[in-house]
Amino acid sequence: MSVTPSQTVGPFFAIELPYADGPYVVAEGTEGAVWLRGRVVDGAGEPIPDAMVESWQADPKEAGFRGFGRSGTDSEGRWAILTLKPGPVPGPEGATQAPHLDLAVFARGLLNHVVTRLYFGDEAGANAADPVLSGLDEDARATLIAEPTGDGYEHDIHLQGPDETVFFAV
Amino acid sequence: MSDTVRRPSDLVVPAFRPADEGAHPPLDYDDYRSTRLRAPSRPFVPLPQMLTEVTAPVFGSDRVKEGDADLTRQHSGEPLGERIIVYGRVLEDGGRPVPHTLIEVWQANSAGRYRHAGDQHPAPLDPNFSGGGRCLTDSEGRFRFITIKPGAYPWGNHHNAWRPAHIHFSVFGRAFVQRLVTQMYFPGDPLFFQDPIYNSVRDEAARRRMICRFDLDKTVPEWALAFQWDIVLRGNGATPMEDE
Image (cartoon, rainbow over all chains, first blue to last red):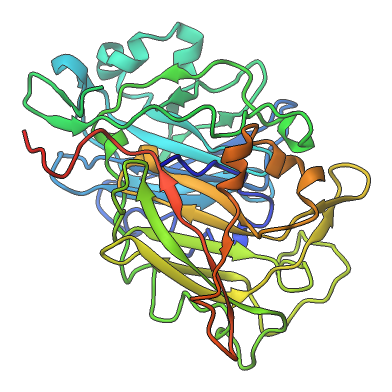
């Protein structure tokens, strides 16, 4: 049996995919909740207003909570997901992975979704020891690290161009 | 290949087969113009499958209500068009069904118009059709939608470009690496040859797997045509008999 091919999400997915609770992995007011926000940008540096970001992560203490978030981008290419910062996660060969989320990015013009990660800029120690980040050069690593802001983190995703985000084959 | 990856911590995660590059379209498919500024240009970095990659969200009544799989009952009247049943199963490539997984669908109306501000095709909107639906597969991976057959519509990709009739499908599976968004097409569509999205899948057999099958047996007399379509996600090597 062979797999069904991927096709683009197209320009009209907002008919179905974004839903009111999608961006809220946790409810507003939850202790420790942080906003992850950023833009999705194309190869010309223009924001993409018809993209969608999905997040998937472990919980803060590895205790069963698994957080899924989904946010379409707005007219300025911005997405936003409210969640709890995950804890460290077991990695290959006994290593420990730094706190991170997996992100899947969908858009018109993407024939398959692309997968990236979001790491946290205030976890320098854990990031330095992370087995995935360690395999990347400095410029590439920087594309995966979100910058702390007042109420969370800011993280742009560049699909193409000089600042192209690192995407993963999973 | 091995069924699982065992690590010193005794944490065992299922190892899903790598993505089938021959089945999926390349991201940089120039005939589809919107790929030009959006397809990443650098090679993907291999990511070991760890806990985050081999788990997936579980949805329930928070996302799916009774009746959400019937797109013809969302308004006071019935939508115009050919009423159809679209049914099938979500399976892994080893044949294992994927139970209780979320499927989301969206589509144009019978005139080929989406209920979306960005759709400027001068075809009528249908006040009785929104075009979105969802369901969870049952314990054997089965799903069944009731809707109307979507119309073809023009788009600006190239001169006289028309999309073949299709329904968009979004499927989660049981692992992040199984996530799939695709489009289901209808048999015998005369527009396939000129559609760069359909043809972005380079392998002909793989393209055909996106086309549903007309099913007279499941067609309900005096009521609706039935189309059958299975969605196949990559699985792992595990067989149900084995348990380490």
